[in-house]
Image (cartoon, rainbow, N blue to C red; front, side):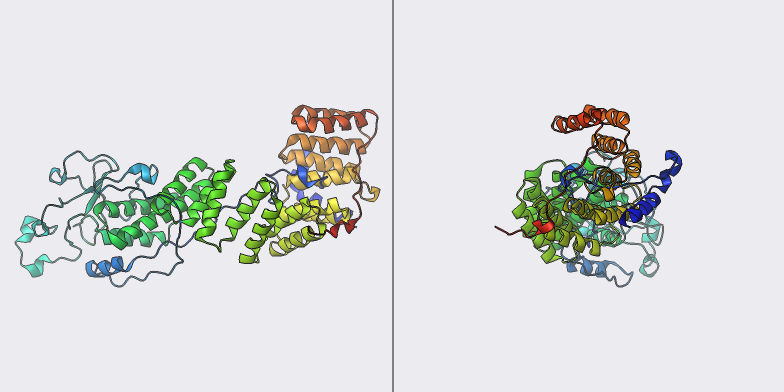
Length: 526
C-alpha cells in the first residue's frame, strides 16, 4: 500500500517532466545520511540560517521630535514603537564637511520623486573648493552669525510689509544646512511654494525615519543612509547624531539582506560591515556577517560573531542554531545538541532546531530521539519538503521502508523538483533488502528523474541509476552508468563504485544490508 501511494505521488510530482521523458517518472530513497548533499536538504550541517526579518528601525529620539515641532507647521507626527536595535563593530569616523563615501559602501545617490528639480549651486555658496559628485557640504559658514542669513525671498519681496512677506512654505535657511552634490547641484526638498531651501538636521532625520517605515528596495535604504549622512555632516549632535548612526546601521543591514537574497554576496558583506561600523551593537548585522563568514568557510570568524550575537541578544534562536551547525561541522555533536536545545528553549516552535537535533541524533544512531524531533518539525512545518525527505532518510536507515517511501512520496508531492527525494526513492526501490519494497522499473525512472532535476552530485545519481538498471537486469547499461560515476567521483568514492562495477560485470545486482534490530533506539547516554 505504501509503495502504491509512493508511486502515485511520484507520478504527480514528476508530471511536468512527462513529455520530456516520454512516460511517467517515479522516484525516491536513500542509503545513508552521510551521502546527503548539503545543497539538497535543510537538515544538512552545512546550512546556515540568515536573519530574514526586517527588524524595526530605531525610534526617533525626543530631541528630534521636539525640534520638529518647533520647525514644522505640518501638524503632529506619530511614530510607532519598535524593539531595541542592537548590533556590533567599530566606530566609523565622519567628517563635518565631507562624508567618507567608502563608509557607506559606494552609495549611489538617487533623488526621489518628492524632490523638485534642483537649482545650480551659486558661486557664493562655495566653501573653498569645487563641489564633487556625491559630496555633502555645509551651506553656511559656521563662522557666519545667524542674523546675517536672510529668508529665501527676492529683494522685492523683502521690501513688502511683514504680513505680506510671510508666505506659506517660505522657510529660512539655517547655519549648517547641507547640499549634496549631484552634477554640481544641491539636494533640495519639495516645498508648498516655488521657494525651497535645504533641509535642517531635524527635517532630514524625520524624513529618513518616515521613509524607513515603508522602505522595501535597495534604493529606499540607500536614500535613508544618504539622509542620515547629510544630517551627520550638517553637525547633528547628541541623540540626533546617535539616531542617525543607528538608522544608517539598520538601513545598511536591510540593504545587505536584499543584496544577499539577490546573490550579490560581496556587496551584501560590505553592507553588513558598514552597518557594524555605524553601530557596533547591531546584532542583526553581526549575525548576518557571521552567516556570510560561515558560508565562505571562515568558521572561526563565524563562531566569534555568533558568540557575540548571543551575548547581545540571548533570546535570538537562530544564533544558537547556527552555532550548533558549526559544532556539527567540527564534529562536536554533544555541544551541538546543547545549542539546538537552547534554541528550542527560546523558541519552542523553531522547526529548524528540531531538524538539527533530528540529524545529530540520527548520526548518533539514537533513532527514537531522531524520529521524535523530525516528527515535531514536520508538525510545525507540514509543507516543508526538506523535513519529510530527512525523516524518510532516517526511516530507511531504521528499516521502516514503507514509511520511508511514504515520506519520500510526500516530499515529491510538496516539491515535484526535489531531486534528493527522487534519488533516495530510486535507491530504496532498487537496493532494498526486503524484496516486497523493490520495484526496479520505477527505480530506473526515479534515478533518471533525479538526473533530470540536476541532482547536486551527479556521480551519486549515476551510481543510483546503475543500481536500478542492474536490479532491472540491464547489466550492460548498469556498467556504463557506474563507469561514468567512477570518472566523476572524488578519490574516496571510487573504490565503492569499482566494487559495484565488479558485481554488475558478474551479472549481480547490488543490495543494501538490512539494518539491525530497531531496539537500537534504546540508546543509553554516557
